[in-house]
Length: 200
Image (tube, rainbow, N blue to C red; front, side):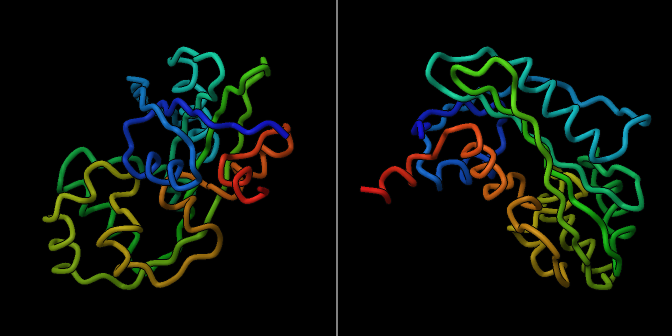
């Protein structure tokens, strides 16, 4: 197994940075600058994969490091909910999620040293919201937290109080499926730094 120490993260997401660093990776942030256009012909899961692929393609590879891009899409009955444009749209998204189940798809694309073809994968988790009161939605939107998050909520933040339950991987909802990512790396002969230290 090859220990993969360095990652170039094609994202400005502090959540993805935190998650990758939690596994011991030395992470360099290089936001892709890719604009996420609507693609109504794609399913929400396909949309997440497409965005991750394009983000990866827009960032140059670094010798000896992996380059990682990811995208998260909230899927309500087959409709993709991205990041809200304003507070009113955030409130509408949360109203639509109230008392219901939805899917969260997080896709990632990875360029690995010595491997020409990028690795692409996506994980899906089912999330169920409590019935939300209008004042509860308004108070959450007023925090500003929904504005940079798919579906207008961050499960690791104040929105934890909105969630009745999940079926699947918590980190997929947070923005990067660590478990699936590490296992995909292992299949290609790579392990994170934490695995290397544990083996000593």
